[in-house]
Image 1 (tube, one colour):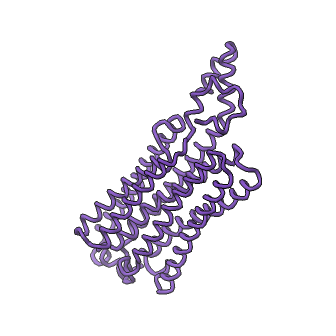
Image 2 (tube, chains in turn red, cyan):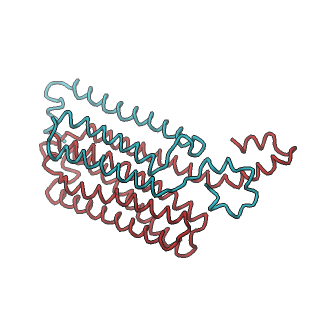
Image 3 (tube, one colour):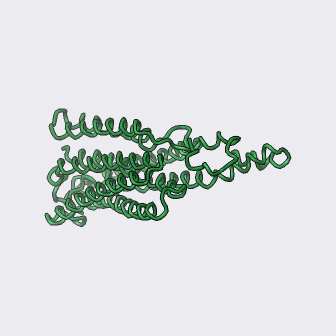
Length: 212
Length: 132
């Protein structure tokens, strides 16, 4: 808005010139974070269609195993804990980055990454266990939609971990520059967003899947 | 708020209002509150389902309620979303997304539910158990 105003009225009055300068200087970062937010919203729609698919197919067992027979809730509770813990450790990393404390930022990012990998390992273990029991994605509509939804979330976490490692390298090379801080802010949005999606995965898929 | 990574811009004074639109201040207090609330809001649904305290139908609605509350908690304390972030554009995008999300979700479920019900006898929802 300010840029439009400055463009319309600017030029004639000297105060507006500095206003326009500010608007331009600030614009790139505002653009990145808003643009990334828009990406997250479109990702939301991707997950919404997968959730809708699961809502439609989730009880079509095709004579195969049901959620109540397959899901191990204590395993899921541990996994939920990992993801929630990684959310707050990423928060600590952002606080350290804000205070320009590079060593602390890297330390918390490493902790976050380890928690992310722990989450993924448990999920892969669970998937392997299911497939080994003959409950793979091709067994029934329920399992197809289950693997599609939970697998997509896991894939997001996987790419989040890759992004996190990339940023660790960047931080090690260049320190906490404005660019790196912006990247960290984007990844923090992404990471918290994944935790947010997971709330609905464990509620809708696992907890409600176990209920009769 | 945004000054910490814009120190090098000398002409900052006049445009201070613009900077505050997108700056997020990351505070330990926010994260701590969000974390504790999320932990509680996660533990209760797990306990409800694992202990079978309530009737299944009641549990279903209660845990969905807990998920909705946790969604708001994490949006406020982790994603730092407020009506002011990015000059309100974040909230606008979110509202549009929620509208689309509700249409996609409720539309699909509603249509597919009725399709299942209107199947010919022997092809309805019950018999899908034997088909993939």
